[in-house]
Image 1 (tube, rainbow, N blue to C red):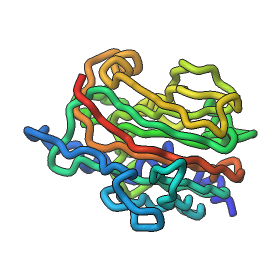
Image 2 (tube, rainbow, N blue to C red):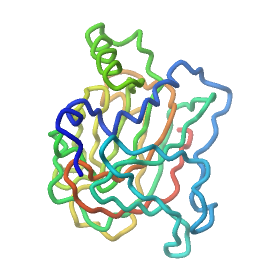
Image 3 (spheres, rainbow, N blue to C red):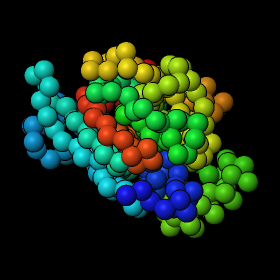
Length: 249
């Protein structure tokens, strides 16, 4: 069942990563941990190293499971009008932005999604990158909006994030603010059905993407997440995620 419209209006992108920006006060440590490789785990086992993010109010959670695909263990995501994800957070050792690499596969793009609208803010697959952006550097009006939304949501909200998506209609290379907040920028890295059913490798320069999206240098990373969600459109989606790697430049 879809959440009431009043709830949807308060919803930030993917619940604004459920308050992960409570980590923004952390400082960069000498060496940050690396995201746990799915390929190092066993099919059917618990997805260790990644934390499950609870579903939004009124929406069931997307199901994530370790499965074997072509001899390698990956995460399979199954969404049915649902929304939740998996997060790797860097804890007390935020990471320096570098080169982000991952591979993914979708069964099919969503039919009715539209990243330009809140009602269409759904994706067969996406990868979130959250940054340790100081609130003091935000314009006063933005800080006031954050505080108002946080008072309504009862949780901290991200101050800067890049969201790499497999879209259904926008061309590859599209960059725009999320329909809920300008502090999350959407970057279309795959689009449409032409490569559905195929494993696709992605390589992104986080510094360059942050500079293009926000017009300034990238701060440290506090988290990386994967998500398949369809709670707005009510559609079904299946996607697979391989290992996510963060390398130095």
